[in-house]
Amino acid sequence: MTQQNLLQRGFKTASSIVSALQFAAPLLTRALTGITFFYTGFGKIQNLDRTSAFFTDLGIPFPGANAIFISSLEFIGGICLMLGLGTRAISLLLSSTMIVALLTADKENLIGKFPAELTDVSPVVLLLFLIWMVLYGPGRVSLDWVLGRTLKLGKRFGLENAVTE
Image 1 (cartoon, helix red, strand yellow):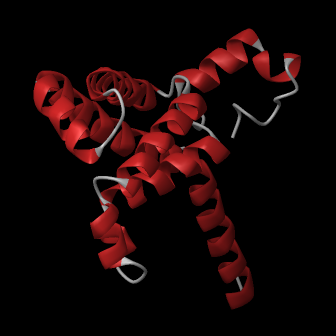
Image 2 (tube, one colour):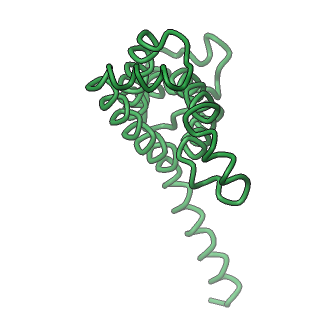
């Protein structure tokens, strides 16, 4: 076997391995992001009075109602992301909470870290993961993918690539 054939065979094998592992990127992204929101939502639910007071200090309207809504969204949304259920919708909703966090609670940190140290600002990193999930979907190891295949929703609604990628 020549060096060129050996090299081609190596690249082909590496390419096959990478293709076989493509499911891992969206799965790991969903798991990490979901766990993060699950725990932050759980913490807020356990301390609704403190969360409401914090929202009041930030000038967020209807702090009590928003504390309940955001806590529930993060807690339930975290579970949904881990399972890959309603991934795009949940990611979109949670993206809006990260934008609000960046404009309120983390505003000074964002300004202080911009642009060189943006990855030190947690909401920025979470927002990037969420946007990625909105655009690319949950991946094949998800309830969204299973339900989409089972119910054949993709073809019915012209979303052939929405649940398969």
